[in-house]
Length: 478
Image 1: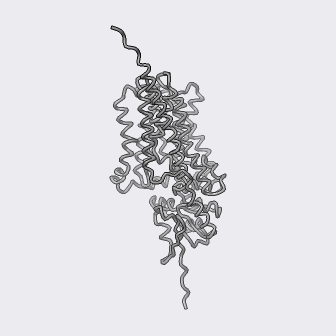
Image 2: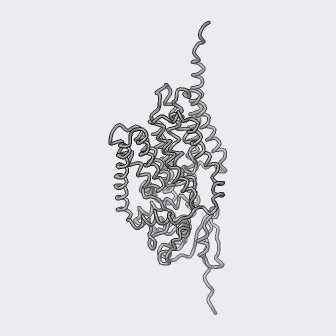
Image 3: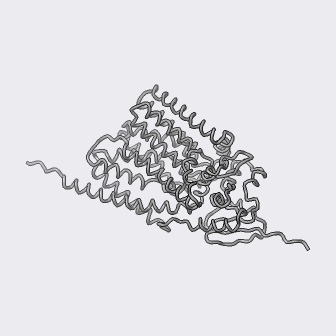
């Protein structure tokens, strides 16, 4: 009886097929990601969330107090506002949104590439570079679409968490541990509910090292937080930060219909919560590796505040940071595992290609050119009503045309929901002094606050994507 020859040709064929599918997936991902950049200016949320950065560059107060300042939709930490300051170099609102779109995408691509390239793996098997590239592609394909399309404070928080955890798991010096702590606490400076990230780092050190090292890291996190917090307070002021980051979120209640909110996010919860939970339960021994305990602990520590944020008024699944912090390290570990190094990479590359193709095919309108038509139309409207038009959902327009920072409607809505009424003087101070027109996208929903301010019989004029509502002057008495 003779031994069967090794199946090298079959393995080589599998590897070749996996690499071909990977290259196709990466090419299609590049096209699809470009489409996210193209549609970025057409999402009003991005206008409202970029506006504070542009206003900051112009010298405006971006964190209002209870009775002063522009009321806006930004009730998160200041670090993302600083990151997006380069968008202020653009000459128009549309161009600023395109710069912000590139920065927003880089917040995912950069940290994700670093984690996939350098996360510790249990083997240095041949082809691990291809396996890591496959993990990168599949992570991109599984990443929640909203993070690509909308400017969330969560995006920078996740980026800080990914790089901070990478530094921690590879740390061989006190400097690396300090850098990991600084990035973890910086995540909290992006969004308050990111507190689970530094907590998870402390817990992981307690589990994999010892209690003393966990306490040391807690000290590093506290010191880093004090330095970052002190710098931000010095820059933005205590009163505005406390009111915006603590009092307003604290005043917001839970979603009025919890069952309806859960139904609306059910499919996403299956991916973001159920998939990691089931995977870790079924592969408990696999997750016993120290390098995989960290993403598992991060997922668990970020879940409570993430779910709470999702269930608050205005909350959504972007608050669930655990999945995107968990996914890349797990994919790297799985695809560099010897038992999955061949067929696993083939399956993962095929999945990345299929998922991306599904996203492309599901697009009602696949944009390959920047969608700037509405921005250009808004510039014309702002020029026609110089200093006299309010864009309730697009404050970026008048930051460029009037060099003034006006209230946005979502901020006014949030103040109402938080039961923090706006004083009349504050409301009037940050609207056009000569206001006689309100411009709103007719293909986008609004809260009805601006429309309620119009007098009866106001005239509507449609200009491209916009409806311009002008108040009718009262008739003179005979």
